[in-house]
Picture 1 (cartoon, rainbow, N blue to C red):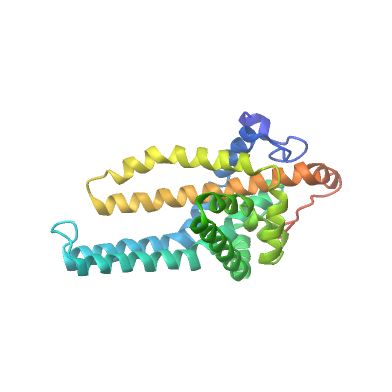
Picture 2: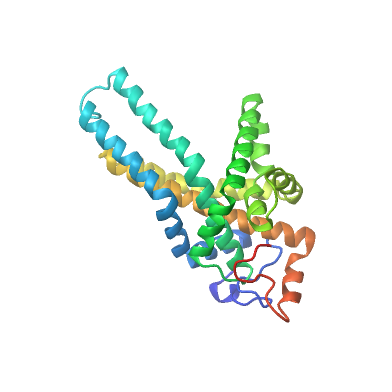
Amino acid sequence: MKGSEHEAQRGLPYGVQDLDAGGMLDHSLYLFRDNFKLIVLAYCAFSLPLNLLAIASVVYLQHAYHFFTTPLAYESLDRFNLVNSVNNVLHFLVSYPFSAAAVIYGIGIRYFGGKASFFDCVKVAFRRWPACFATSLLYAVMMGVGAMLCILPGIVAYLVFYLALPVLILERVSPIEALSRSRKLMQGFLLITLLLSTVVSIAGVPFGAILVSFPNFLVSMTLVLLFGNVLSFFHMVLSVVIYTTARCHGESMDLDLVADRVDEPLVAEGAVL
């Protein structure tokens, strides 16, 4: 879909409708581009502080234990792994739920033709953080259990509950309801979601390989952290598009949106679906 075609289609800014795989990828790219400022602000507010903490920890370990200049002693390697583990836990507990809530809310509202400032997104992020954390935790546990039983159940859990966070944020339901509704919406969309997720991941492999190959470990780590956040935010955008397509497919949401916009927008500023 060309850039001129995605504007004002069916009276909506992005032509919300039942899309095929190519259309979903196009809409995700357009949304990512058009809302890049929101994504950067969310990164600076919620992800950058932990990234800087991780980098500062590595700088300290480099100077204190001569990392990457002398062979790593087991004691110093344990310290490095501990710092890395703590950073991952903090990312899961704090950074990801906040950034996901802010970005998914902002992208969702704007996708449906509404208005949402970054301040609106931050308010939603703080209000919905406990539910986002609980949903992410349940999602991770189910994927982990599935992966331990066999790789395939873990992949199925990843796909079935892929829309849990968009449902949670845009429909204001409980974590259990979000997971249940995601399972319902994903019927008929498992393979296409697997395809799109795989395409996005494969597209990032060459860039990741280049970044990892940098001779300076600190520079490499910084760029890898940044690139990982870019992929994470793009998956958030993609999840909103798949969520919308699933609702258009099974609930005719695109027709409802057009009908409501005859008189006034369905999505008012600061509202949720």
